[in-house]
Image (tube, rainbow, N blue to C red):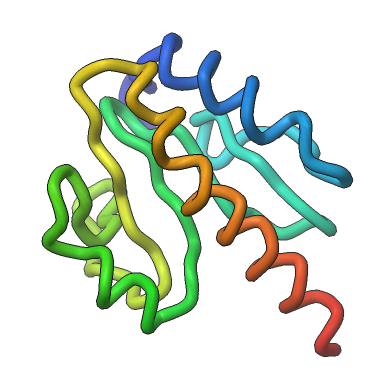
Length: 114
């Protein structure tokens, strides 16, 4: 596996938001810091950005806004329910709390549908 690089300050900000939510468990995704609910991945710190799973329609609406694109880790094809947010300063992720909490609720609901 290639060298793992991620912005530690981004992780610290995400920890401050996501680890306050009930049932969120920190972990790893291919060596990168990740956040799980009910055993399902919903967010991760990846290199200089943050990957977040959201409903497909939400992803379509968000992609193209400043700093938001489809998440394509390791050069893979875009995933219709995954976005990547890239912010210049780590504290700017605090403004994305709503998106992060929406992701948490969305992925939480997926495990309850079964």
